[in-house]
Amino acid sequence: MRFPAPEIYKVDKFYVNVNKLTVPVATAKAGKFHIYSVSTVDEAIKLLTGVTTGELDEDGLYPEGSINSRVQLRLHELAQNCAMNLVTQTRTLMIKAK
Image (cartoon, rainbow, N blue to C red; front, side, top):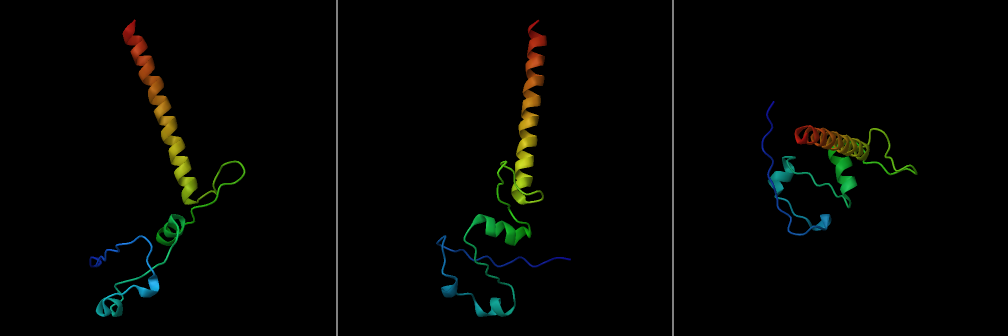
């Protein structure tokens, strides 16, 4: 199933008074334009993904399954991979130096 490309409207300012935002009548009647008002990135992420971002707990962890916990886990995996690559490269250089 193919969806038509959405019409894109540029907003000149970061903060927009949604009550004063004008949309072409034909576009609005056709249901092609939706306005969602958010004030934080966390709100936007939840709106777009349906998953909460999560709040840090006392241990510095995010709730399991939240967006931030996924990001935290992935960053941890990347850091471990970098550390493993560094160890491997160091060993290789030590062997070549002999």
